[in-house]
Image (cartoon, rainbow, N blue to C red):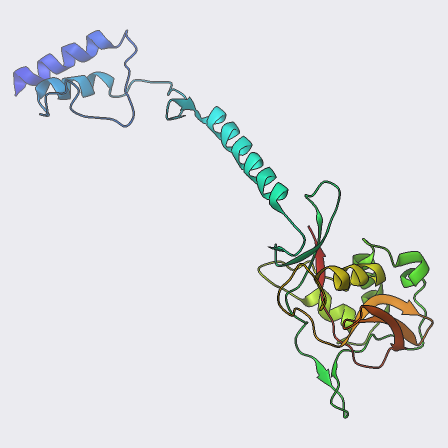
Length: 253
């Protein structure tokens, strides 16, 4: 034992002037003879306490930084393939696609069902009021904010102006599906497009996604009325804001 320690210390002293290389994962059987012997231990002692600079972590022979870059590129390419495959009527990111822009990567989806928790009146009608009776919200007029892409701001403006809840705008903002929480009440033209593309007479869906009822838009019509769509004919109408209509939330992607 004494001789072994003496030899080990001598070997260690000789090694102080050299840079030892330790591979990872570390294998204590340094000579590869399938036994951990004195030679293996001496090799370990020679490296003990020495400073070292580890090589870059590699994955399948590729440096970690490069591997991450390659992975990001692969993810981007796969995402592009998904975008190229998107079509009207597809279920995507929590809803059914009813609008795609020119890039084919962005658009609008409608929730797969009506917003729940509807109110029922004495006549058996179910839904939500539009709200803010007697109030003119200038920013949600049909002429100024009925286009595609205006529904979210309309919804926020309605909720900020109205103190009553629940109303069609507020319940759409609170809607959640498949982990997505950024829903809103569609504008006049967003609702029209939704009705035409995935409505009751749509060629893109082979099942009924909507009821034969009226659905509120986020556009007002004077101080006491607002616009809604009847989905049996995709026809727009106006009605008193206190009346109950369905609410169908949409979101952009």
